[in-house]
View 1 (cartoon, rainbow, N blue to C red):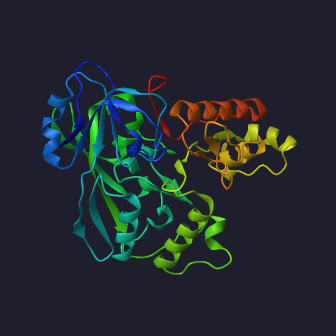
View 2: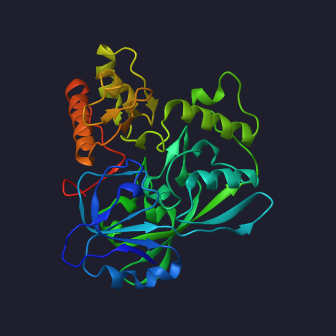
Length: 345
């Protein structure tokens, strides 16, 4: 286990700027890097009674203030096929593996299904927490089990998809109870050896549909790169807001005023509205503040840090957007990014 710095007097002295893709300046009391499974056995002793959070690539988190606790960085590595048949395979992937690299590697090995999820930032461990998804595919569809380290019992356990209670961009890992109890060690996926592309998203099937996994991967990468900024060039955390789900009754009321409002069917009673459309209609697309916080000019769902914006300034912009959407459409939108600091946990 690697330790960046330790303070025992409650001060926050570890600079977290390099550990998040928003690149905002914030400090923590301590930072521990998990490099191997055995590090977890002594973790509870190292933590003591201090508060903690776990991050991977830091691509879905915003430190809105300093954090008076311990930041744990999960860097466990390894990919292993643990069971295989002529139809499919079960693959165990360590939580610290880069997600996009996992997608590429498995697809190249003839294990299919994840292609639509290419170029999503973050690590394997973050994927089940968020139940990441894109272009008609969710990671929950492929999860066989999630291996966790239980901080209460100091044991390694396996959780089933039913245990995890997956839903749209959500799982039980987001609850305070599980956040304080479990650290994700690895995820076992079940993937098919037969390529069966999901092309329901318009951008993937026009003008010509991909016929191979490599073509689909490249199409997804091209679509995402055309809309989403590279965090290494323009600091961001990907999609900042979840797409809200509303009732069909509310949709009909909105259609009376906004005839072109886009939506996607969820079931007989509910639809999903693109948050990017709502934000653009509210006039925030391309918005930039003097402090450096802004909304990406190619995709309104992305909040960006143009320079030296503080996390609390980006969060203030997010709250301004949420309030505006509520006032204009009577729709609540929620952050997809986890907000950390004294403002909220």
